[in-house]
Length: 448
Image 1 (cartoon, rainbow, N blue to C red):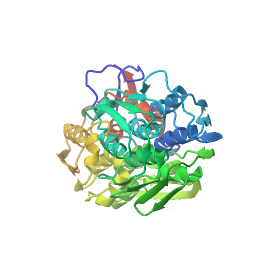
Image 2 (image 1 turned 90 degrees about the vertical axis):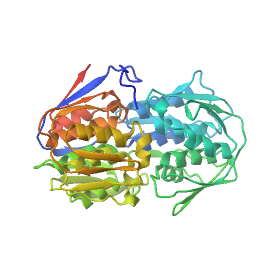
Image 3 (image 1 turned 45 degrees about the vertical axis):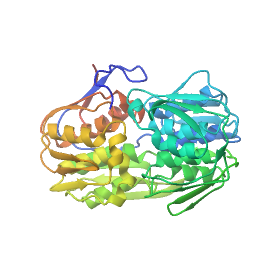
Image 4 (image 1 turned 30 degrees about the vertical axis):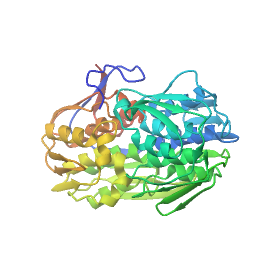
């Protein structure tokens, strides 16, 4: 978790807090920013492709910009971003160059873990670092399997900074993921491109497959068979155009807000509905939410749709464990829906939430309890009794998804909610306050 005493974010912003007034509803049409996972991968793969990759819908949040900056520091010419448009002049699989300094990835776990795999296949040494929150997150989950491939990655007892040694011969391996993690899977796929032979990855449960889709879209030899992914070393990427859909993780806050606030009726435009990412839709529907999809189509191999959410009373459920990997980033907001539902909601099989930007199980349980909701954290989940949300002060611990989730809770609160440490919202959703207030949330953002 981010140090409570930290006064600035990695970008040098002052610490921010939200003051959210109770009541209201969400209405209208809006488009949330581009998908963060796809934005990261577009920069990474476009940079090592042959030719020029044009990206539209790129997320101009701090996390994705950290990835963009890292590749610029490794010699890639990248134009933009300009209103979500980025042009990447690929340097080919072996065209990256030694950066002058350590690569600072800020708050972005995706950047660090995926880059670790890609840089293990380069000829030069690299140091990867991040902010105080990222420095607490476990990196052994990528270091250990990379070592099996012949990579050498030094660390501070499995934490940042990471020292990635270049010049080693990598070998393809067969690896069963011990946990469902798209970041670990993608790290090994990127390393597998530089390995001799085939790398086979078996997942215990489906996770987001943006890497696989983009690799196929850029003509790289990769096969997917159920929960098994096989990639061949020694191939090449061919540049292409990439249209990044709106991020379903960002859309989730508005979905939950509309689901809990009577009179709400909101439509979220051009949202990615990749089957490995729609757990939040499935879970909210099981709780009784009124959600309809229209204008379904496909862009760049990714399914998209407009999502309309109208208020309907929610009921507590036992969340099916098979939905957990499909909604892993959306659970802070789902917990707010559970707090407003009738009856008990039980989540199990979600221990991954304890090693995100914060311990999202404990931080959400503490926050809900401070607002008068009975929430009991367990080792791998939480038990929430639906009730009446009160007023209070929340410490988001610098976790952007915690901050935005509790902002939406104010729609059903009995009084003002103050949320501390909100600067990191800019990492994934830089215009959250503007869109939220435009849709009907009475939110003020202040510097401490």
